[in-house]
Length: 59
Image 1: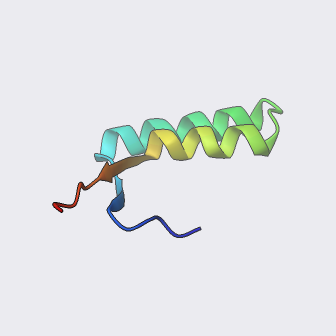
Image 2: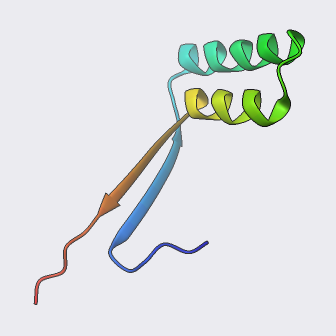
């Protein structure tokens, strides 16, 4: 999947305490028999700072 021209997707790890919370939350969910299809994306949303920016081109 490639973004359109004028769309920027930035993915950066969050600060260290938030990363530890996300990793421990994901591990706890997997330990509690939550399906991996639910636990892993939820943990990644906590771990990563995802920003989608739309740039308007001037005509």
